[in-house]
Length: 288
Image (cartoon, rainbow, N blue to C red):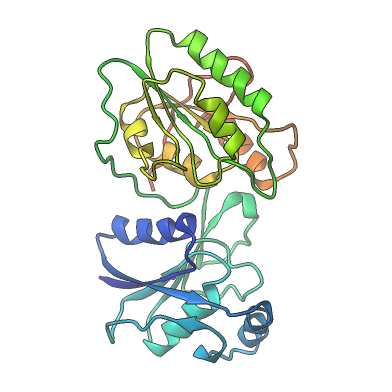
């Protein structure tokens, strides 16, 4: 199987498409696409409604092959290009998230349950995002270990230094005999990174200084994984690989967003525990 992956340049989106290819042991080629302005993206919704597909309204790198077994993409900036290339190459169109605003007539759609997808034959509903976890040998503890994965601000959450400090203090107090490892992410605010550097971690990656990604190694080795609630991709990785107990660190009391809905549903099914000052010891996994 040879797949054409359409990328909008966002790592969290691209990784889901790559995960689909790797789960199928497929070869793949990645090309970037872009709308040069908001008007052209808005036009893509209209063109899709009219069943009109053309490369004129977006820019794209040129694929190297003339045949593909499918076109795969994730994210609203890729869906119109996905359908366009699928029609050019007369192959299947595959969306890794619910393509809101576009017609749901892709050959295959993988939609997360927190997006409330409709019941259609071409839609497969998943409790998490697609992911493919591959340890890289970046973290190798010499004894029992705990991993902490820190995200950052987004349109739903803002990180609070005092709350995170209380959570870290609990971890250091409760796991005194463990190696404690931590990684931040591209979205982690500077003030949070500065606060984190006051702690004596056995292993740490501050993303603004080191672009390494040890998350897969944490999932491979750590007995417990703590993850801030702001990233569905990081949570999805933790629930699809390894045996770690998963603790989700709340960021604020807002319980009316897709992140909280997602983790609440997963907690009810014993895949994870929302940290409340106690440990839940839940490690049920999802086989993608």
